Amino acid sequence: RKEVEQDPGPFNVPEGATVAFNCTYSNSASQSFFWYRQDCRKEPKLLMSVYSSGNEDGRFTAQLNRASQYISLLIRDSKLSDSATYLCVVNVFGNEKLTFGTGTRLTIIP
Amino acid sequence: EPEVTQTPSHQVTQMGQEVILRCVPISNHLYFYWYRQILGQKVEFLVSFYNNEISEKSEIFDDQFSVERPDGSNFTLKIRSTKLEDSAMYFCASSPTGGNGYTFGSGTRLTVV
Image (cartoon, rainbow over all chains, first blue to last red; front, side):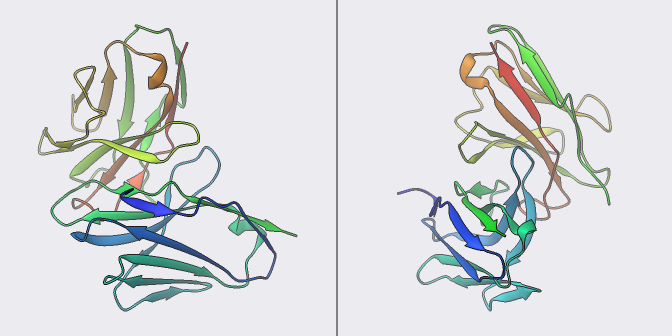
């Protein structure tokens, strides 16, 4: 089983729609969770951390279910500028490295 | 906003040659990292560096790879004898604390021919 698993997509979504991404992780010792965004041939950039209670940042909402080892990201009122690859990332307690999923590619259609 | 700076942005090298990829981490960060991303694949951890020594490394980081912090600002990744399969984007990152607060550099695209 992959350490971090995501649906690769692509997701082609009309502007203004709501889109949701899911991610599962295999290591129950995972402690920190993140969503990163990566534009084509660019570096990953932190979109948001994911907290146990769930958290929201503007149009973005992240949820964590530790029991199911499942993380989600919801994007509301999608914009053309949201087109990117969204990376689910976890960090295991006591380790410094980040473990990345393969990413889900999102294209917002005008 | 502080940045992690990487040079060069693109390097082409012949198979078997040595390459050195350079990074300037954020000045008050203590942890430094190299990751790579083969085209179309996921970002993979190579190595972490703290207190002037390697603190963790992956299976990818074999004897062909080495890292160094030659002075107070630079952090380098050396590949001794490049192979075709070393072609990838190499990202440097730094963080103030291990595992959190990462900032990635814009990457060096390495092409081995």
